[in-house]
Length: 272
Image (cartoon, rainbow, N blue to C red; front, side):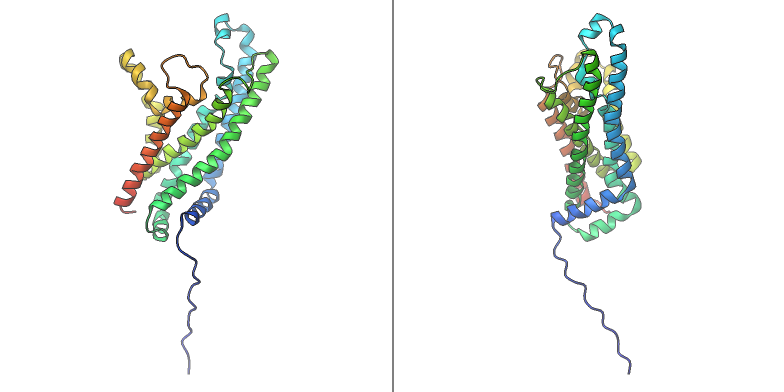
């Protein structure tokens, strides 16, 4: 007489916790090829562009006009790579969330975590942590490499100069916020092309378009745009109408939090 085989019950794996969701998101992040390439590009841009810019400037410095020499920004040129690094980080921030929507994997994620929001928090925490761990050291390396090149011509700036440590470390923090802002936008749009277009439009298209406004309006509004507000942390020059460094970065953080908050509301209201 044949017997029906019994299937042993699956072992109890415990309840869903934010820590376990974060671990799952870390596994997803590090197992995707685009993550490695995007972070690699961001680090190379941050360090390589800084070295290239400092080399070019150092070579041409003796031929510069005295006024240009007097206004030379040794710190700014060593952080020139941040301008390209933020593009790589922003694109990756969008992909962190939209890639799951494009493949349909988001349904599995939301099935495993029915409350949904821990998935968004986990993605944000893991992405922010990895970005900070890579880009703060990259900014420091870019600074010291750039200043080593400039020091051959005596036009470098010391790390101990007032405001320099804040600006250099702030460059890494700025890139973290860029990534979170892009992640929030990607979660709102849920489409890779749309998320990247929205991120690029807000960060890189709107600021130059402000020049069509009357000068007084432009000067009053431009410092409060995400790009200008965030980049204030990398400046040691308090002149002009820019926001103070920490106020600017704080405003940019609010932009990122607002994007993530809107994404959280939509995540609860929309189907996956």
